[in-house]
Image (tube, rainbow, N blue to C red; front, side, top):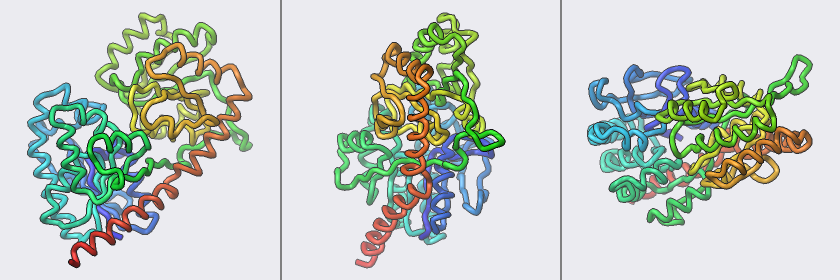
Length: 401
């Protein structure tokens, strides 16, 4: 099967973590026997055309580089849309250029289908459908539905975009429900979560093969934006260090709230307890997760939370908020769920993991097992291939009529 992945988020250069799970998906599909290519959004400094592990990657420029600002901010396109009105003007040239590139590539390479990630890429793939006539499978990841749906005209554009898809994949049950509320027929949507590399993300071991010792370390990884709830994690941290004085917190990531969060940590007296690392590579994140006793994702909304999967694969118990797709991932025997925007509940859950070794070890083993059985890329790639094969068969039947 020849698959063209269309995406607005994709690594721009080696070591870049933006959209890295899309590259991992491409590798997994290729390992499953598919021939995979990618049309991604161009960004200043990124190659226009390259091959990554045998995967052809095209990044068509849509404006002179100094004006290509759609992915300038962490937090995705919705964050840029709210912050920078100029970015909205770049949407039209991007959509037209991306639609043309997808249509040309799909036709030239005779692909069987287009897998469009996020609604914006689905929109551009749909715009070019009269030219390429290929079935589209769209995946919604969260921000495109939660955030995009609240933008002016966003819900209408999302419905229009997803109406061009043969099948819509939601990465969690909650996101599926939200997509139905948007007006997409329920029988058109399937749930397939994101995957992770469970060989790369695995518990650290010592030279004799025994598990490495954990530290009283709590880790968060993600964009420093409002919906990630880091403000509440800092307030919880102040309560945790009062009970466990040798505990430390690592905040890995960057975003528009970094300065205000740093100031808030100082006001809470956490200057010696909280480390803001900025963006980290996948290997750096894995190293933090392997050292930590707890990984925390205090989001106010979340499509799924790939970082939770990565932490679980490292055998690190997770504390997450009971929102979006997080309850799909953090089930009762693998970690703890708390209400969103509740710093005290967050602190109590973290303290439970730090103070109860038996509970911690049970969660750690179950988390690793669940990551391997439910979210490893071979498992997810097999599910995706099943969806793609059905869409490709329907597409060929439609063209034959």
